[in-house]
View 1 (cartoon, rainbow, N blue to C red):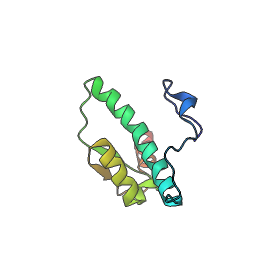
View 2: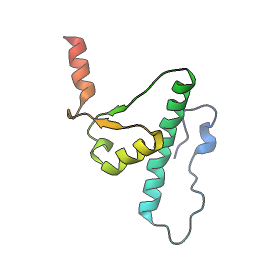
View 3: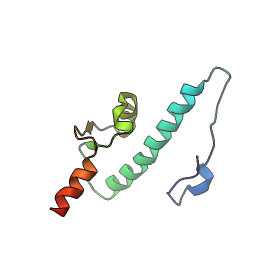
Length: 101
């Protein structure tokens, strides 16, 4: 809601929901926000593909959104790739510990 990190869309992408009707509820707005995040990630994915980087799957970790099957399904369908969720709750900490070892 506060803009995007991609310079091409920057602050023009902030705080807008198009097409709302009186039949939409809070859940619809939350899902729209989740899909917006997924499409931001898709822009990064498309840039990688444009540079001939081959990606077969996405690996997700952390204790937040990865616990939501809906969130992971939105990412998988938006990217057209399987999402593998780490069985370690904070994989970044494990990686940091390995690097420090």
